Length: 190
Image 1: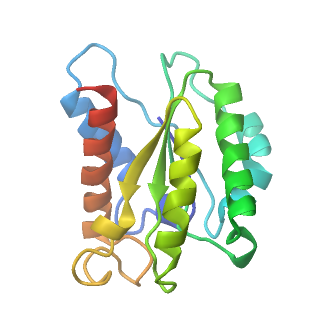
Image 2: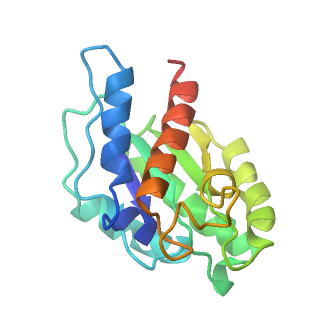
């Protein structure tokens, strides 16, 4: 299992959702094969999808991926959307580049895309959600992941699931795992 993202993924200050997700899925999956996390995750604090697209080729070339993995599952989790990526064309182009790079290196891999929460830009989620939907609709093995506007914002505008309005608190890490675990199990048919 590989994870790409920004500081919400790279930081383990209040939890480690990628590792906890692997543990949870291994509890659900009773076969002889188990999920294994890639370590380190391909996450860079402060990166938006444009910076991720610029770095993906070098990241994939420099990372020593496990050779005995039957199938890769990737979770793409970028909460930062900068002004240059706020245009539909730039956002989709950068995301598509990352998806294509993963699929070229790992044919048949499964990819989940997180819908980022609105944060300080309340309209952002509503704008970006259909762009992500379009990317998912045009691809094979690319699925909707978790929706941060549901679990991260919650009913208290980030008070419980973040420690600073952006980064996951311990409760946020747990909520992320619950959301992605349910989504992954549904897609894989377990």
